[in-house]
Structures are given as structure tokens and as C-alpha cells.
Amino acid sequence: MVEILKLGTDAPLTPKDVQTFSKGEDRSRLSGVALKAYRALVEHWGLSNAEAAALLGVSDSTWDRIKRGAWDQPLSQDQLTRASAAIGVYKGLHLLFADQMADRWPKLPNRGPIFQRASPVHAMIEGGIPVMLETRRYIDAVRGGL
View 1 (cartoon, rainbow, N blue to C red):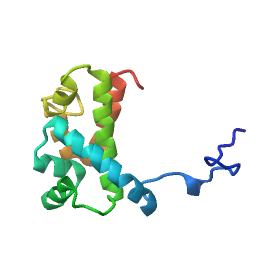
View 2 (cartoon, rainbow, N blue to C red; view 1 turned 90 degrees about the horizontal axis):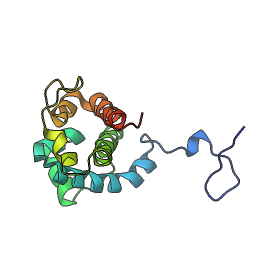
View 3 (tube, rainbow, N blue to C red; view 1 turned 90 degrees about the vertical axis):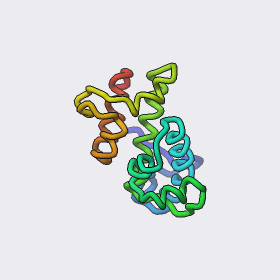
């Protein structure tokens, strides 16, 4: 049996040590970098303020504070999951496409079964976390990652 050890120790890793989005300390530690990456993604994809807020699952006024860097709270578990899924889609698209299509694709109408002729951004906003995760899996499958 293989035992996984805590970094820098001889102690085994326990379920309590695993990073999750449900633990407040993990969300506090991850939120800043997730928001930095998400703000960059919003810029690259050319999302409107309303699209960026809806995709992240926050109000327009909260998005305005996040955008200005005036947000000092950790994201909720749902918000961090949304940010993570969107960032995964962004990364997968940049591995799949070597040109500007990586940043254009999310806003183009798509005939894929997940999107039903809507843009992936619209589908993810309407479908929430399940469609965001499915979109990420779709991109991974298209690029041969699954």
C-alpha cells in the first residue's frame, strides 16, 4: 500500500489535510489567486460586467468591488467552484487552440449538445455549475485529455 505523506514530514496525509472548497481556511487562501485569474479571463474573453458577475455567481455590485480590488472576503464554495471551472475552461482552450480562437470560442454560437446553439458563456450562465463543469470536461475531451 502506498502512503502519501504531508509535505516536509513523515506523517501520513489524512482526510482532514486534503484541500477542499468547503473549508474556510482553504477558501481564504485560494480566493485571491482565483479572483486574479478570473479577472484576467473576463478581460481575455471580453465578458460584459453582467456576464462576468453571472458566471461567477455574484451580484453586479459585488463584481464591481471585485473588479476594483475592493473585495477582501473569501469566495463561497459555489463561487470558488465557478471560478475554478471557468479557469479550467480557459486553460483547456489555450491548450487546444494556438491562436485567438481560444479567447473567441466562449462567446461564439455552438452546436455542441451542451450548448444548443448558444454561446458556451451563455450556456454556462444559464446552466450554472453543472454546465460549467460539463463544459470543462467537454474541452478536455476534445483536446484528448479524457
